[in-house]
Image (tube, rainbow, N blue to C red):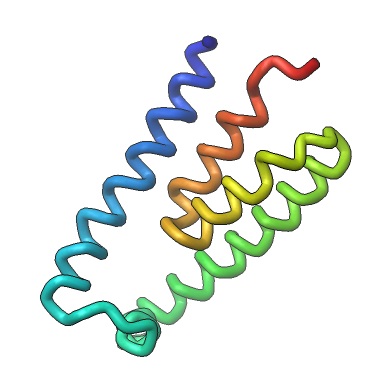
Length: 106
């Protein structure tokens, strides 16, 4: 495995762990409801701007992933990375996709 692929994998793991280090205690303290989550995203202008920035970037990544898997016919990658992106975050989904995309292709 190349050094670049190892870096993508490490970044995907970090991108999964670091957000969860904040989400899990928050959910434990406040209880997890989607309404509370959305309220936290829009508590002020800075968080709302960041939320929209991440949402737009996640949408662009989704479009790019779909276009890539369509051309490469590598369909199994799409749902995994889509779940990682929207279930964990862009910081996990993007490096995970780059890790999976950069493997040797037959």
